[in-house]
Image 1: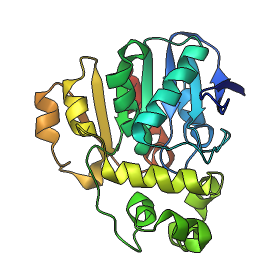
Image 2 (image 1 turned 90 degrees about the vertical axis):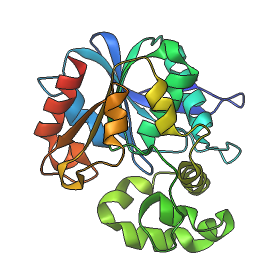
Image 3 (image 1 turned 30 degrees about the vertical axis):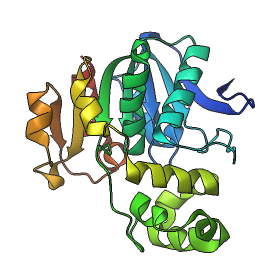
Image 4 (image 1 turned 180 degrees about the horizontal axis):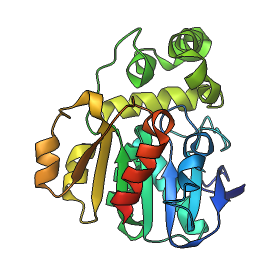
Length: 254
């Protein structure tokens, strides 16, 4: 476990690091998750092992600090991750990023292009989302006010998402979880999709085969983004079908 201060107040991002050769690979989790739990098997898979690998927990999540003063916009997350990577002497990294982490990775590549050489986005959020009371995930969390969520709305979310997701979501700060969800549903300007289309680095987008056809896939492909369906999985592709996921990531990084 390693760490670096990423804010003026000294708040620290923490990551698990596996030694190996460059370019470094940086794994970034989604909302309410933690990278060591979601990506260790992938980083250590025979098709992918041997590279320096950083399994990073975004600020407010997992093993990282949970400052209440942090805004948790996608841009803030990206800038904090950039500070962490620079502290770790990482440049030109290959990013493998899931869900909200994929959104952060796109913003990171747009704002800090020296840090990213390749993107593998795993069912990432590219567009604004509606706020839907009672829904799972970011749409349901963002439907609360922050005061409602912190005062007890989080218990309703806990009961909706189930034991698997809650096992890592419970590690996130309540303010961090809510603000991250709000800014994820609001998206960025330009949107993450628009930023992704303009990036000059090799880009791959992985999604569950059951969700085909993926909305906007033709536009992504026309911009040079490789769009690939992974069979026998849901949103958490790396957990649902780890072998197929490792093969897809290895192909994308080859």
